[in-house]
Every structure is written in C-alpha cells, then in structure tokens.
Length: 86
Image: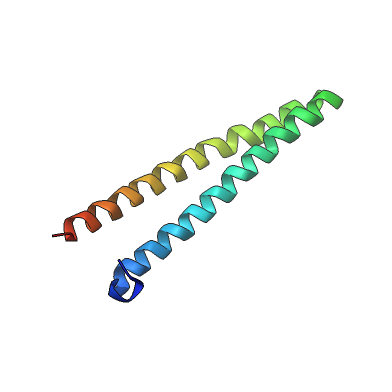
C-alpha cells in the first residue's frame, strides 16, 4: 500500500505504534544496562547487589506491561487493517 493511499488516521496510528515501540525499546535497553551494571558492580562490591537489584525489580514489571500494551495495540491495528482489505 502506498503512502498516498493511506488514510491520515492509519498513518497517525502507525506513528503512535512507532513511538510506543521506540519508548519500549528504550526502557528495555535501560533494564539491560542496569542488569549489566548489577553483574559488574556486584563483583566489585556485593553491597551494590541490593541497590541495583531493587532497581531491576522496580523496572521489569513496567517494561513487561509496556510490551503487553504495545502488543495489544499492534494486533488491534493489524485487525483493523485486515478488516479493510477486500
């Protein structure tokens, strides 16, 4: 489908999905950075495990929820697009 035949609503919906994907990817990268820091700093000073472990436990549920929300939005957009096909 060409860009010119896309309705503004579908383009806006795709832009929202792209933005949501970018934000979720950023949050996932942050969680992995904290996990790596936990591993590296924990080897040097075990006292860091508690602080960084708390940060991971705090962020992981948020990232999982964002992934679920993104998946729901993506599948919803796909269903709308499929219903518009002849």
